[in-house]
Length: 131
Image (cartoon, rainbow, N blue to C red; front, side, top):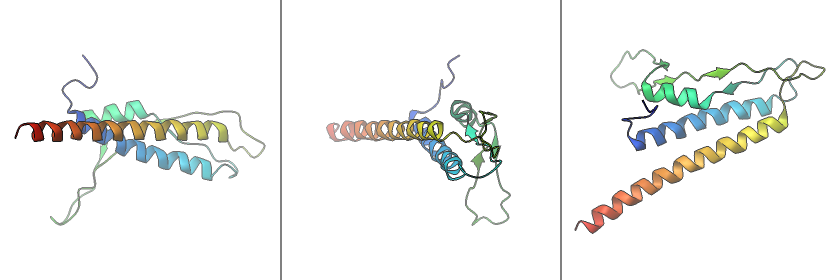
């Protein structure tokens, strides 16, 4: 069975964009702590987190005590436990690796966004031609 069979394309793309946004925060935090002694970088397993989000697994939801509360369900990211060589201060952040991850994640976000825009342009074109 295909991993994303039966999933609406726009749902997949929007979820991918949201997870790329969350992943950007993790990468930015790793870069910000490049000189923090004893810091271990956090790396999101993007594909596993996306699969769990689409399948509805790994969801964290907050209790709603009033109907006016916003829906704040978030997906728990799949974190990879990695340990590269550490520096003298036991900091394991490799700045070159983090910059590469940031570039890859930004590209992923841009591709998801471009595909979503293209999908809506096709729908708009189809509706305009149907007149």
